[in-house]
Length: 332
Image 1 (cartoon, helix red, strand yellow):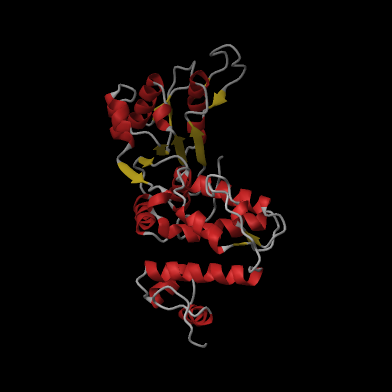
Image 2 (tube, rainbow, N blue to C red):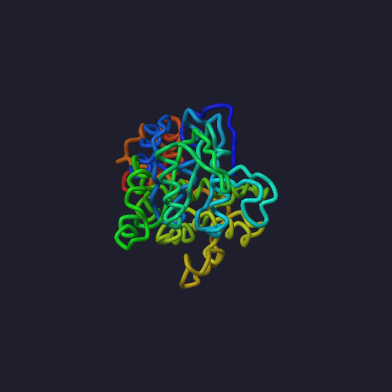
């Protein structure tokens, strides 16, 4: 998905989260975005490795060039070499014309190798030469071509273990991992769950042209308790599914959740619940979680969740939130 940007954004794009773990990732992006050194992004499937790679590109000094991405595990090996390096006319059966490889297309920009651990040994050797010499040779050609490309790679495999098994070249590994960014799984950044639920709820609601949808308290509890083995990708899919299943309703109930998130198939009776209360309960729980996360420092909490101090104080008063995390019985 090549993309050209004319302006450099001030911050990494669409990286949602205020947890210390994701804060460290953002800090690393800021440090490496203007460098040409290769970056290796590691993390479980669904954590958003391509998003991190795009953020490095789009906020760095190569943002005026293309961002070209290829999934090494999605293309059969015989075709992948031609896709990466290109070929000359007549180089093999079916090569009817010269073809520019994807690496050449990324000249002056960024080339992203997703699932680099799936590369075959012959292609690993070619990639190593490219990183060392900054040159490529199309299949069927004798001439070399110089390329100016920033390489970012990603994997959900343990490359140290792959090296021990003889599946990955150790010299290539050290070339790729000059800078390593490890993305934490969603289960260890629970502080970000509410932010992500809110973000994706609004995002996909707009795309579906739905009015703002909220979660019932029990549905929200189930979402927060779930372990999210598929990470952010699974969360995205869950929210989209819920928005479709709930139809025209203004809030998502327990029965709208998938069986994995709601394994006991809990059902809301809905007898004492309405949209206004659903919205208010969501805000109360969100503020309680945020205040707890920042040790009830209201000024910092307001800054981190994107409110003014006055706006936060008004919501705290409106929803009668105390430091204990419970509603107050005091008037106001």
